[in-house]
Image 1: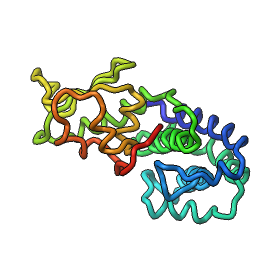
Image 2: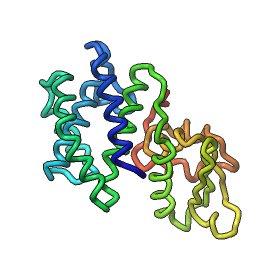
Image 3: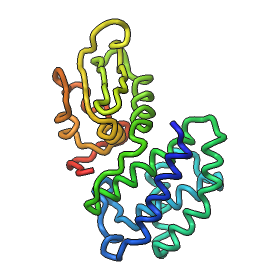
Image 4: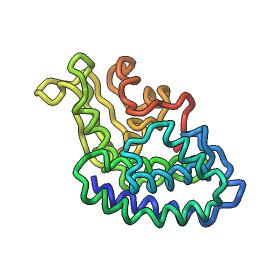
Length: 227
């Protein structure tokens, strides 16, 4: 995954979006992160960028850390938040380009998903650019950690043709289950942006009841998300 490019493109789009938001939009609750509104989601992204660059946080950040990032910026206007974020981004991008540890790819994952979280909150269409890389990143990690005692799953991205094998389905044996969805839907589902009901409603062959709770690498929302 070209983490730096994905991060930079998502940030560029988010900065353009922020410049046109009124106060009502900024105060809109983000269903994917219901403790935050749109402005607070920007505060988290600015805070994460600053703190990773300063060496205060090594990704991933805990819920306590992200809550503090938001609280520390409670009195900042959106233009102040975006200015802070823009200022810190070049150093973070350099870290992402030079660090070999996978954890330094996580800010790209975080920002890409928060972009879509915000777009969903505001009733905008999803932003799917980079979904193939995000799906490969999260599903590749899931495949590496998939326990042999779980049902095997053959996952296919219907729009890109990418395939992943969770479990023994890559050993010449048919998988217990198959899952087909767009790269965007897979990226969102595996990263805690689809409810269990939405995951069950994807295109499965076989009964997914035994694996639905194992697919999200972050807690799945109770309520369905539109984006």
